[in-house]
Image (cartoon, rainbow, N blue to C red):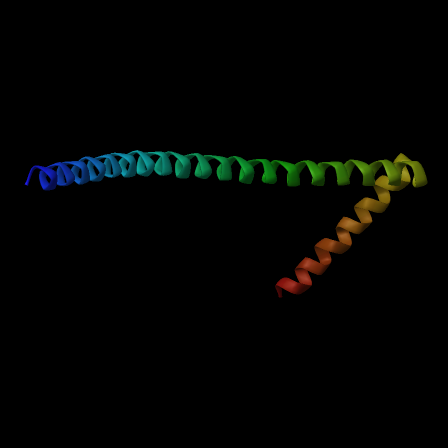
Length: 95
């Protein structure tokens, strides 16, 4: 009977330890999920910022290209004409 009681006590001890370990792992898992969510938000913000910067770089590169090929005044006039054409296209598509 004493051996059986010792075995039962040993099993109860191991079960308690497993329950404690499970609780710790659940807490750690929750913390890791929160960290993942925060990092995903950070990645999304950085991706959006990168896209904005790429667009700015493209615009600057385009402006420099037009300026070097056509000059400032002619480039500005050409861009104004293109913008006018785009606005006409938008009007046509809106109707």
